[in-house]
Image 1 (cartoon, rainbow, N blue to C red):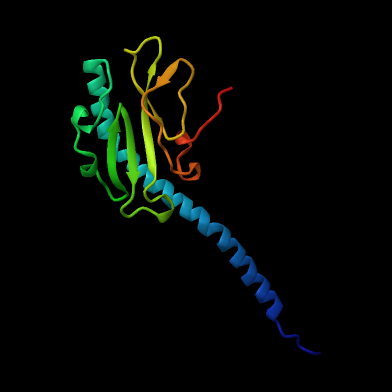
Image 2 (cartoon, helix red, strand yellow):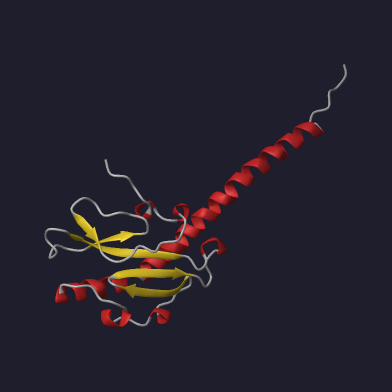
Length: 164
């Protein structure tokens, strides 16, 4: 009886390596997108204190602050983080400039947060719109929307959604 050799042929090994390469080439960009989304989330967290200051200003004055000084928050260049180079208040809206250690795909891009008030009852609580999000019917967004970060790198809440 002849004893057959067991093992993989060179072609079988090359096919396995090719499949692993294809899977890897699909996984790396997805992982990079995930990292960028996490970095932009840090930018949103940095703006939480500014959102509170704007809300307090609005409750006291029934208008929105024009700039950082009016909102009584530090100057834009002093509101920085690992992934943020400045946080600017402009007519009630918050514009976060991404930078420092952030991924190069979104460096120097802006993410806007805008307050939204109930059109017929401005004394109602403020909602906040992130990025490309539009106000729902019956609400009005305050300030300019200057977001330049591609939607792909934003959380679902910051992307534009169509109403039904």
